[in-house]
Length: 123
Image (cartoon, helix red, strand yellow):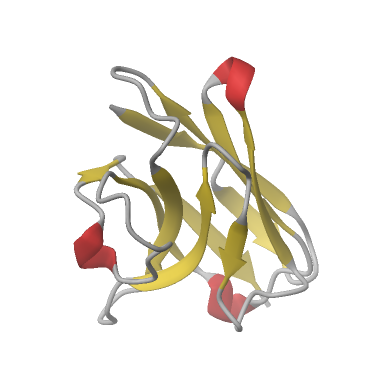
């Protein structure tokens, strides 16, 4: 199971840190990702990380502003979001990919999802 938290309302240029706590079976070889979905839009890849190595990928739209990380001891993944923009407003979801392939940016590859947390950036 995945439990996302940390969303909220922030002004343009502000920061938030999202957390995703993982529980259940072993996950060292899995990948974990953050996706977001704004009203009326498709679910969009934000960032993903390979649990065992920490190797990460970030979407071009957030590169340099967002950083994905994980803390293995706490079984928790984070998304540090800086320099937030109104277009970052969305529900943010964490997800787990057990396919053992390359880090995927496609939401269909991820089979386990958290419940989502709302991020709203005011202009």
